[in-house]
Image 1 (tube, rainbow, N blue to C red):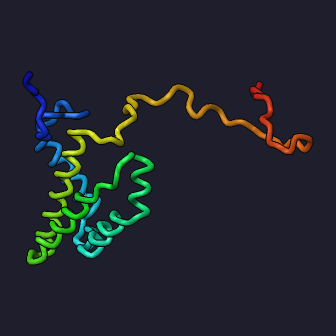
Image 2 (tube, helix red, strand yellow; image 1 turned 30 degrees about the vertical axis):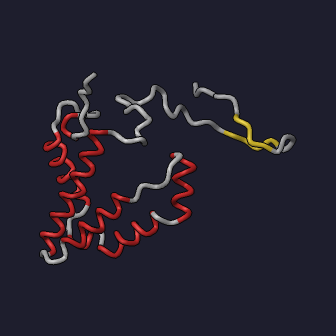
Image 3 (cartoon, rainbow, N blue to C red; image 1 turned 90 degrees about the vertical axis):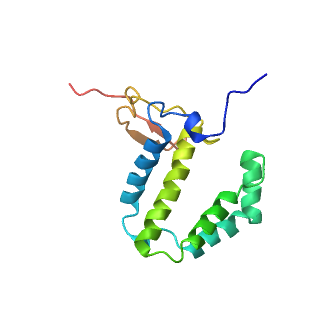
Length: 155
């Protein structure tokens, strides 16, 4: 029995079947460049260390066990901190570009391989008649509750 699946992001396109991994990285980099236009917009190494330490906290592990049935995975947060520390001797613009590329690769991998959080299908068109016509409510003193008035159509 041979397995044809690999863990490479290029081989497992998720919703972007027409784009390859490098194109998705470029899309993400362009998006992140707009979201973080200046060096001061990227996280500091100390804030990344704080995220890593809070990820390893008791409360976060209990939440993760409740939601996912397993301990929180904090390796990515430590990798982000370690990456930040490796950039300490670069100029501000070089650090910003390196950080944006690092995060763009992370997002591209997530887009191409999927996530355990991907439980909803993407809606291609809006729902019909949503949210619907506005309704008028009044307070009913007998039941001490709000009740909807019957729909009236203007003539």
